[in-house]
Length: 249
Image 1 (cartoon, rainbow, N blue to C red):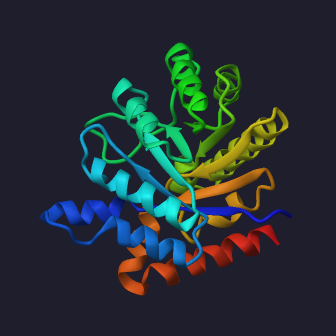
Image 2 (image 1 turned 120 degrees about the vertical axis):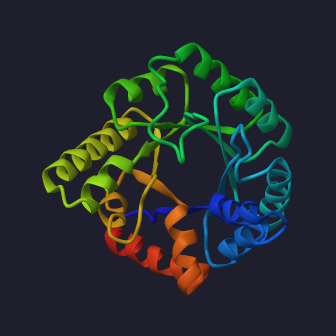
């Protein structure tokens, strides 16, 4: 079975930095450490309120990824400001996500079905600039169909509901959520989409997602940054990589 890629989201290194101000810890250093430790790519979410990653971070991360030959995945809201920033920086990929100012983290998938015109315009502009457009969506047939309709080559399936149900010990709900993810990955892949997945994944929840043969990439951030406090980023990534590879084997 084909090896699954690991993208590392370094947003919350910037969260720690911004809690006090100043330079440290540096998201750029975290990205470099992740790449040296074997990350297949770096993900960073430039939020409209700049609560963690900054514009300067994106510039530095793009330069680092170009120098080290690894892709930068820019997560962003579907707004004119964010599309313009993506077009200016030309990252390898841009993942369109929903965004609300009051949320602590992304709370669900992008409603592509309800915003086809706006999302489709953003996808077209990104693709014209040579940026791989991705849509962060719920594992829902309507959203898969809408992603195809707007011409997105990639979708990232929101795994938060599965992870929450499993951690809460709600086995029946967890089974339902895993089946939704399984069906969405299967159907999306069959329709020609590249399938990614992410949100809320940790050591206990990664195996069933990594075992889905259609999933080409996992994007994991908050857990790895948190675990790195205790064991270091390379060790945290190494354990995650082991679990992903075991699930694929």
